[in-house]
Image (cartoon, rainbow, N blue to C red; front, side, top):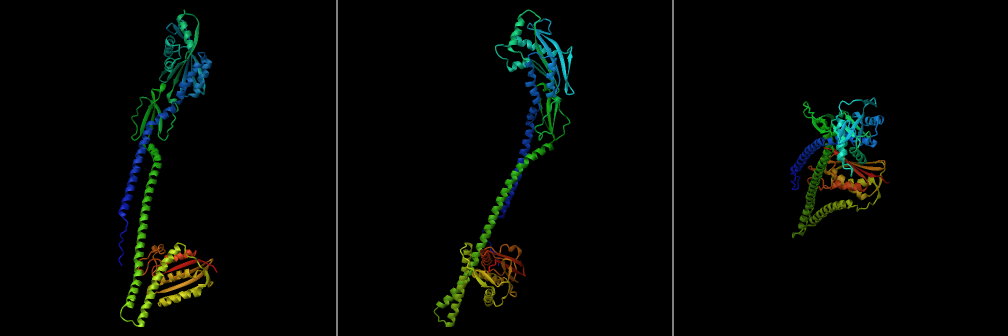
Length: 547
């Protein structure tokens, strides 16, 4: 029989197109997100160098802004001992300071001073040099400074400040920096900041005649070594190697594929820069690390879309199966009704015809009407009972039954109905069972009917065995029929499902085994099947034993 071509069908090309579309989108999303991550990392490589610079020069900034201005607190009264102690604290905290020169200065109005300007004389009383040595400070007095340029520059600045500063207000930071600081490459000179009262006193000295009176002033020059700065790589994930190089450093042997950037150091280190270098593979590791959660998120979205696609496909598959079951049910149910109705119509027509019928003929037609009406009634009762089982609207009426008499009754019925059907049974154990005989009878009737229906014409044979096992009673129905294929075993207990073979093309609506399973479940039992194609099937009904 040619299989029906159902109008309701799946469009596999749309499913394939959907999978291809989301797969292509997934790949594009991965590529784009990876490129964006790579660009972001490379941009960070170029911008995060400022963080490294700030962390690296933090000790220098602290020296410049906090430690050096401490000299002012001595108000010019530093001597060699206190200067050595101060230098020792500097060497201890700032390893990049390699040498400190202390200038013990005097300010007066003598004409023989080292620097005389604006009628103010600034002379050098003594000079001391301090260096770190074995964790301690090594100091020595310098009798003669070969180059007094630093001292003279600071002295000229002080003289101009005394002559021209506004004593009616405090000095601005810019004025203080220009007067009391002198920043050069690898060198910072500083003299203690004058108070307004000091400036007024020095202006009075400018107006007086030369005298032997003078005032103390301190100056220090700090010599720095930029290569002793401790580089603090706060972004090790970006920078593989950071070095301090001269500002003119331009490596010509840089390997291809490496990334490099630089940033100039400030202040006294302005002739030097931080040079950053990372191999491409080094940055790729960071790119991959950052890309992993993004890729996982994209993959999660992809899996979610695939899941949605699969759910849609499954829904379509379920719908098409349901449609097929409904189609088969209506088709088979119509056929089942059509045959008895047709026979009843023919018999009724004959009975109602004008021609006279003999008593034998009327009796024959009456028998036909009764038999066909019984078939219709049985079919309707099965469908109604199935619905009642699903809705749990049937009550179990238990009573004690004699298994031997119970089974013999059904065997006799089927022997009359099918004379060629050979049925044997054995009971092992107790012969009495407490259950609902109507429900158990329905199970027997359906399983015996199926055994006959799905057996070869020359192998109409069924063996029924009843055994006790622990707290259960097991009814086994073993036939020598056509068997059931493995891939069909999970479906045979579904409503309206029919195994496609030559034995059930007509006369089946797919309710028999589904009805049995519902009955067994309703009776708190279990039904299982074992089958081999062309060898036969065995159905086992396991029910809780009560006596």
